[in-house]
Amino acid sequence: MTFIAHDRRLIDTTERFAATGSGPPVRVLVYQPRDVGIPLPLVLRIHGGGFARFRADTFSATDVAIACLGATVVSVDYRLAPAHPYPAALDDCYNALCWAHATLDIDRTRVVVTGSSAGGALAAAVSLLARDRRNPRVTGQLLHVPALDDRLSTSSMRQVRESGGGFTAADAKQMWNVYLPLGTDRRRTSHYAAPGRAEDLTALPATFIQVNELDPLRDEGIVFAQRLMSAGVPVEMYCAPGLGHGAVPGDSPVAAQAQRIFDLAMTRALRPRPQTAYSGP
Image 1 (cartoon, rainbow, N blue to C red):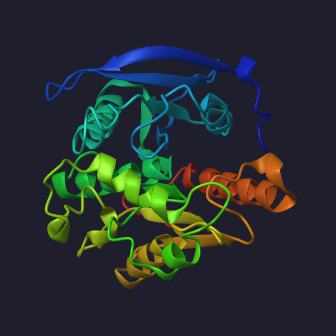
Image 2: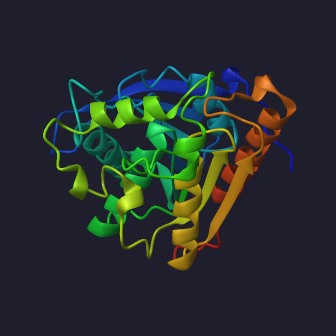
Image 3: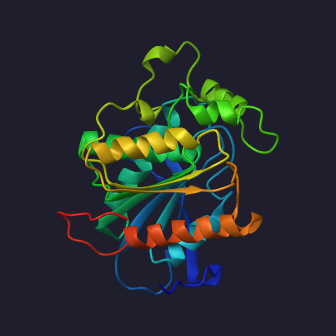
């Protein structure tokens, strides 16, 4: 596989405001390869940050890298908790997807959603919403170290509870407390907030999930992958050995390898395919 160089000079970046008629306009950054001349697949990318931090341009290098693989990337500047708790961020991300699908010159047979950490929760929730509302058709989802379940009851939550570096179980608890409005009945958290609670996972797009061995979120990603497979969804899952939640490619050879595996999965998700079939990442 030959990758396009991750060169910002090859990519045009524009600020847009996605207006759909439901909710306020959403600021998005649109990354497109220059001088391509044909509609490219759409990638909706949702940043992480515990639902409460960062902006669409915080991780712009990731958006540029995905655009260089041959895609139109829409990075969503969703409203942040606690000022804007659930469902504000999900509404913004879904509305941005609908706007991009209806407005941009894209290949509508190739529509991918992706996100890391809290962004992974939002990406999975967007896929659920798009399935349930039958619009637009999402053909792939790539979830990177996703936060999926507010119940925090997995073995990895207990194992990494006192981790000295990076994201811990205490951080996960705080994240959900910030995202879910005060007074939310946590016995009945909506699966659109915490996709790991969804009972019906059928008819969801083909999925790639990366989890990290030393991440408290590890097991909820693994369980979600297993349940998707049981529901008949094509799934590829990778567990990066020895990595914590926030590892980046420069941290170690394993982190660099994890990035290469993610890039390959994204490349496969962007391949041309018939409208009626999706063969998996």
